[in-house]
Length: 87
Image (cartoon, rainbow, N blue to C red):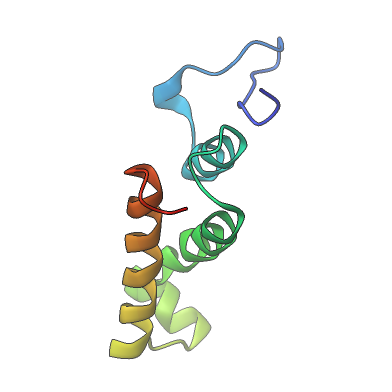
């Protein structure tokens, strides 16, 4: 498995040490997530930092209800993939 995160000696990191980005990549590599869900999941992962008020203020970004619904749909799609419902 190429996407499994490695430490400096080349061995695979312990599972609880994997980042969300690494989990997404491995889930795609083993066929749990489809390509579209992988791509949107990485975008949503980057987007989650806006939950912090200081990040919102620094960037001048103010998400609204429509943005939240879009993010929720990406999460629902990922969950459907994990449940084997996303073909």
